[in-house]
Length: 586
Picture 1 (spheres, one colour):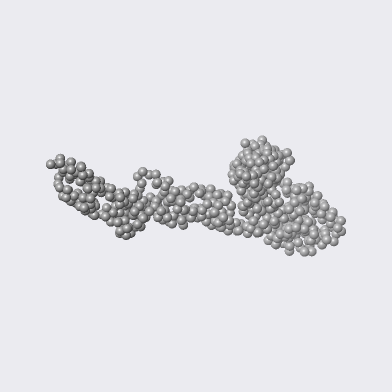
Picture 2 (cartoon, rainbow, N blue to C red):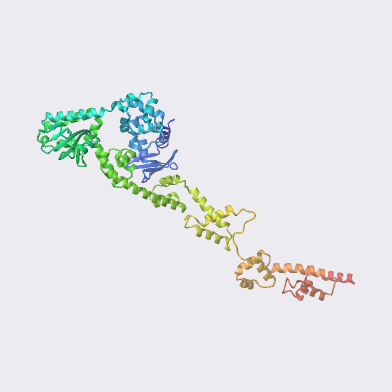
């Protein structure tokens, strides 16, 4: 199946059948699929518009115009007709996937059906896209000949060699007809006069010693006139039948103009009655029509001359080729060929040289833009922000990034590798938040989009779930042991806070967590008093026992005295228990 046919029919389904786009009051609108609201489409500098479809997220405006002007669905035969009639060239530049063996054969049959010449030079001039397609599919020096053989044709019978004299013969006939017309109206010239040097100009003006040569077309070269006539005659003029009727060009001193223009400057023609002037012009027009009626229509309206002038004017205004193509209704590829002097060079003069110089400068600027794009990309900027900074469409930014094998995922991967490396290193930071901030401050110049949340999120996704966590910061000094030690030594919370330079609330909170509040301390101490009092109850008198218990716990509870032990004893041991134990000892 033809790839272009599939693609264009899919676009028709996505955009036209579903009524996703409309053109109203000189503006393009698209219908949002979420809420069915119509919004104006943004047209980017490169001629693209943003709208989602099966094949992507954008489409060239000229392609969209084609879909609206020639709605589908399409058949392959219909597309071949569009190509032959030049309709595609008004909307498309390069048509990827259109040409294959089937479309080439169908186009060739169309040429035969229309009785067009099939020799290669004609095909190159009139059907360039078709000719290039045969070169791509039949590679080699004689690609068109190979194509003709595949089509079952005899290349020798329809070769350019068989028609090599066609233009020469036509040129001679034109020369003969023009001379006949001039003689008929008594034009004051000598015809085909031979000079001693061997020169034989078509017309010779003895009054001004001027040689005048007749050519078939504006495209015909004038090398003979430059080499032979220039040094022998005071002036040399070349007149042609086919081409712009208004232009006058001068090449190395040789004037070149249309016979129509030339006649309007001749005194004999000016003196003729209007009826006879019209008769001469009418006869010349009939000759042109007999050769090519399309050429006649183009010449009388100065189409090619005006086209080139328009294109050059738009280029001077700074418009890009796709935009120029839309304005003058031809393909941007044809615009490019004209500006480069590869097509209609007879009308562009020296401008192609200026254009090439400008393109070279543009290429250098493009290189700088590309370098800037890469720089912004590595800074972590999104395609949207890069597009805004460089004044281009997001699609064009993504296009350049794809060509350079760069994308947002790679930037994020690069950034995350650096985050991982910095987080993995051991630093003197006391808390993680300080280390996160350090990572952000270190990478923000290279990756402006980086934030504390990104670093924090990366840490907990890569480091947070590890059983044996790697120590990555020095951390704060562990004050818990110090607080407990000082408190057990009898120091009050306020004094501990002052000693360790900590807030009083923090000290008290830590003591509560370690169950080292005043009540907790007394409870633990009393439990130990109970234990030691029972331990020493049978060994000595009460007074001595109280002293032993106090000494035993003195190191752990520095403020503990014998009186504290005695008070606890009489508050917690029953008198009956004491007396029974005393009697047992007796």
